[in-house]
Image (cartoon, rainbow, N blue to C red):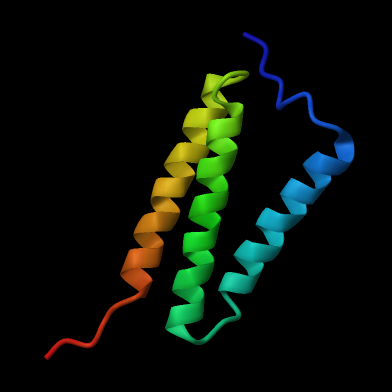
Amino acid sequence: MKFKFNNNPVWFNIVIALTVIIQIIGLYHVQNQYYRSLGQFTMAIFCISYSIKERKTNLFYALFFCIIAIVFLYLSWSTLQLPQK
């Protein structure tokens, strides 16, 4: 089975890769838990939208990005721990 990433132009693939790398690196430099949680939630939305885009052409990548989105949603929820009374 031959996996192809997608039929997008090269510049689009570069922009996607840079966005993910910058966002992941940026998450570790933020000290505020609200900004970190928002960044992780943003990555989850990005992965879900990319999964929806890829579901027609490559189911493997669609499932991969969906699983990554679930991980980011979990990290976002666990990072945002509200003070308990």
